[in-house]
Image (cartoon, rainbow, N blue to C red; front, top):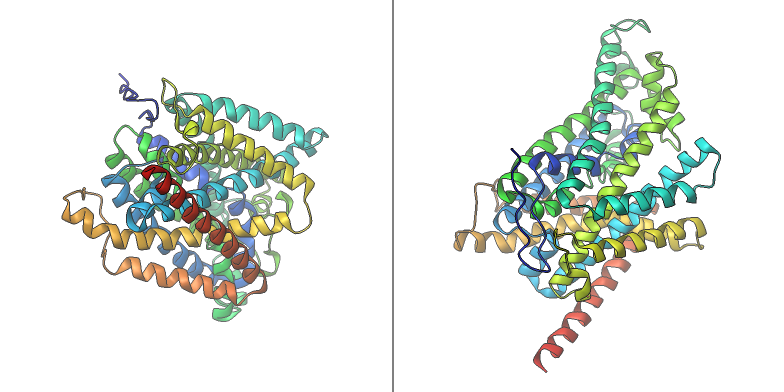
Length: 463
């Protein structure tokens, strides 16, 4: 017998229909994308086997980030998540700025994902990419119009495909390494000893850290969805814990096997499925149609992530509207608790972003996409500083649940220092400097807009 969905209390309330397994798979689905299948080789080429150090550092930052969020979400569930907590910690302007920054990031990511997927599908059928892009977005719009329980069920099975592919890849990789497949004997550490653990020194690890720092981005979506879960405290705690160890195994396990199985000089960045190190491993196993398989996996990965971005951006917009930081009309939900208008707005701007990619005006698109690359660092720091301000209040008010951050007076500051280190590395790199410039401009714009909007809203309220 299924658990009944909580009734919708008013015209702006979201329904609580998501189970823990939905939250878990939505977080995994958003984090496992083309960055893993196409971008893994960039970090390996920069650092060699020592890329594992970069993944551990980035993973540590992500774990702290998620655990701080988990404590705050369990105590004060909100689909606005870190935007809501920034407002509670630093004032309404901060909530406005962080909320719209994250919404912008999700819209741009949605556009990148649907553009990448439609390009591959367009090649398959010999049609213009805008056709599959239009079909996919229209389909996902309908899915997001469904009650949240049905949406969660769809995304669970959609994201599960990617998880099963990675599990299969890990199994094939281990069998290859042990020499259990007919393609060769026991590989051992021969490919690692040939170049050494750290062929490019710590400078290579630092360069790799830039490549992998954002690999874990997307996991935070689980805290957005937690507000629509049947039991936010238990759901977010269980989902985050599950996501963290699964992502660690999937990412670090995949990278480790690629490093062990492929010669170092054959690993690099990939512009297509044919160049992916995952494809190279499948070809080692003599699996026919390896390129086609990886193309299909990448399309599914991109489409699944796109679907979750539509969901997340619509919930963020709805929360901003309820809090008075967006037009109130977007805060309205229907009788099932679905913010239909917010979904339409997110989809519309997703189309605008896709159109920008096809139009590609000089300088604008690279600028916006580079801004997306650094937004996650801003979120890391915003969450850490919000936690530092809110944690004592949660303790004082007796709001702390069983979900708690470890060493709350120490680890948040360590995370801020590590995030600052990532910024320093980016400033030392030409491409990184352009990213940080783009982020600084976008953050400045939304912060100034936040100050002006909240000032205007405050004056209007006193009239």
